[in-house]
Length: 530
Ligand code: F6P
Image (cartoon, rainbow, N blue to C red; front, side, top):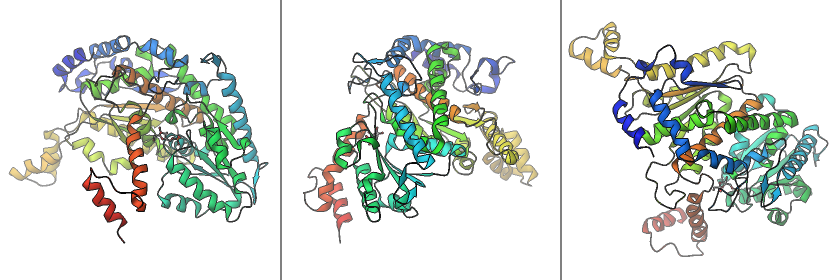
């Protein structure tokens, strides 16, 4: 499927991106929708490449698969499930799963959950010691990354209640979070789709014990977010504190429903609904916009160009927005758990690379850490810059200008680089001469011609965050369709879980260690030595 693109790439791989610019390029290689502006003119994509990329969607049957997803067909065939996170943000409509319209249930749960959030916010629902001051969300993976990322992102919209997130089974995590909290005014949310996740249940038990020391009925200050209601009851959580969702919501796609409860408590009913509206608007755009003007589709095609055609194995997500500090971690799960697979839907080995390695940090911090490698290392890393037109701190507008200038300077530097002549002039100005001049100058050369994209959004509002997260969800979907994989299962996380369960008793000394793995046996012995 990618052969024409690979053939094209072989002829232009070292072409200078700067030579592609004419007066029309910026307009032709950018998209503007609903306040978002996406520029991909600083990539080595020309009109012919774009046309070849656009052919991939038809070849892969994207339209049929996209409809199948939105209509609730069971496209996650290895788990026999529909994929309907989009239903969680619907404001109306009908979506049938197994002959039943799921939208009334979605709306009912949303109303219940938002009413609960308002009661916590207003103080009409209290802990033993009075109005709640703190929320501790215990969950991991999709039951942590979505709400914790969004809570940080939307801090300016939060009320007085502070949310904390505990995910790691490392006792240090829960210890440090609980250390500063008053159990009598703390609400604990146990977020787990399956309610079987070891880390989450262990942390939940520890939190229950902590609360039980000073709270008479600690379970009353617990809430469960799960699709396994029988298990939440066994844990002792009252049914009216349980918010369920169906198995057609994947963990990493679940922030839009009950898993977003901590966020809803923090930002309130109206802002949470705005967050959903932004995502719903992106869903509509994804379904109706022409491919070349379709943001998720173009983001995906550029991703395919870089990862599967050019062979760049990673991509960096670089938000120039401190409040998006957890976005790279969130996208790591979203993209790598979805598309990190080597077997296609047909059960055969993929004949292309799987989805790339995703990583990143907010700018400008990353600039003073790993950008050295991005600019001068031997790896080429496509960089995805993001920046807001406006910050939330009008009295610190000069900070925001500096932030924006830094963001633009990086993509500029990556593309333009600095040639030997300019580097020689710099070294000469420092007084170097002869062979030392050349040696010094070469260290100051930037090869440039490194691809990047820039996404500008108006301001990090709840609506905008909804748009951005849904944009990435659909990008992952499109990339998965083109790669021919099921983006909605995650069998790759199972083996480690099974082996950890088997090693538990080995660590406790109640079971023998693995007889096929001397290395692990030795490590167990060292870790358990007195
Ligand atoms: O280990 C992977 C995973 O299954 C993720 O897909 C999921 O988000 C996470 O674990 C947590 O699962 P749960 O919400 O069921 O506790």
